[in-house]
Every structure is written in C-alpha cells, then in structure tokens.
Image (cartoon, rainbow, N blue to C red; front, top):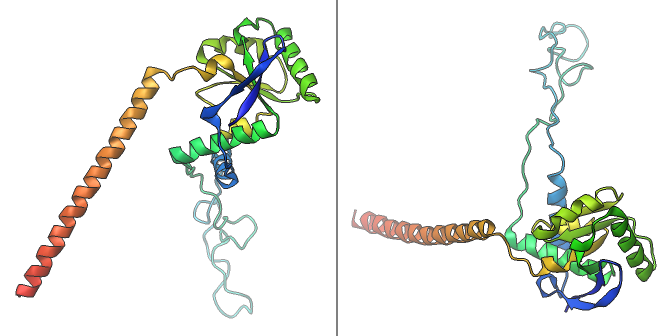
Length: 249
C-alpha cells in the first residue's frame, strides 16, 4: 500500500496516510513514457510549414533545352534540387492531436505517483488553507527539505478546489507550481519535482458537471457496443440469404 508522510502547514510531522486511489503495485514504465510523450506533444502547436516547388516565388521556365547541352536534364528552377527552390517532403502545418485512452491515462498517473512515493518525493500537507503569505509557503518547503535532507528546487502543490486561493501566495516562489487535484496527470507529477498533496483534496469529490459528462460518455460507449452487435447480426443474416440465393441459382 502506498503511504505518504503528512506535514502540517508549519512543517511539523504528523504521521502517515495511505493513498489507495494512487496505488500501483507494478508500475508500467512503457505506459508512463507513452503518456508523457502525448502530453509533451500537446505543449507545442506544430504549425511549421515550408513552401513546395508549386508555392515558391520563382520562374517556372525550363532552365535550358532538354538535349544537346551535355548536362543533366532540368526543368524549372523552383525544383528542390536548386538553391532557392521549394522543399520536398517538409512539414505542412498540420497538427495531429494524439489521444490516450482513459485506462492508460489513469494507469500512467498511478505509476507516476507510485514512483514519486518510492523516491521519497511525495508528501501530504494538512491545513493548506492556513497559508496566507508567501514566506509561510517558503518556510514550509524549507522545513520539508531539511527533513528529507536536500533542498527543494522544484515542487508542485496539488490542492483541492476549495483551497485554490492559496495559489496567489505561492506564485512568487521560483520552481513552484500549483494545480488542482482534478487536473493532475502523469506529466505534471513526473516533471513536478516534490509533490505536495493537499489533505483536503484526497477526500474531495468531483464537481457534478464532470460526473455527468463521464456518465454520458459511458452511456454513449454502451450504446455504440449495442449498435455494433446489431449491425454484426444483420450483416450475418444478409450474408446467409445471399449464399442461399446463389445456391438456388
């Protein structure tokens, strides 16, 4: 069972807490790398574009006659072989969005959290809403760093929706990022340095709108499965009737 050390807002140890929702007994590194690649691919637009030989602003007149020159055959100077010509097989400015299935997203997140726990970079903070000033948040990080025996250069606070106002007190600290408990993913955990989970966020429930959307998605999947089965049955009956008609002929 995955467990994490609990610290108060003032940096005092107060026991441990188990994290069954993030526990992954056998971390899958392949799924984690796949998820990180997808998340990093979404960070850049990928809209670079080059001009082809049809788009470059250059004469399309044949360079010289086809035969009798002793040289190679050439056409327009806009060909990719010439300096100033078009580019062959270059980027076309089309962004293809990579998508991960929900199971892989959840499993990759659990793997990232489990690895952070094994590395000693996963902690739970209680009473986050009592942090009112930036110096209090800095003091908390310094005390946690002393307990683990190293300076915290990068940290991520994972807060509950009710405590997201604390983000303003942490915005001036370099290397510190704040994210909601419902927005964390494998990439934010894996690259987030020391992960500090809000104790209130562990018991937080998803907003009703998000739950309704997820229920609708599940219903759509079930409907698609039923439709596929019915279509498969109809295609089988149609094939059988065709075979019978052919034999009768």
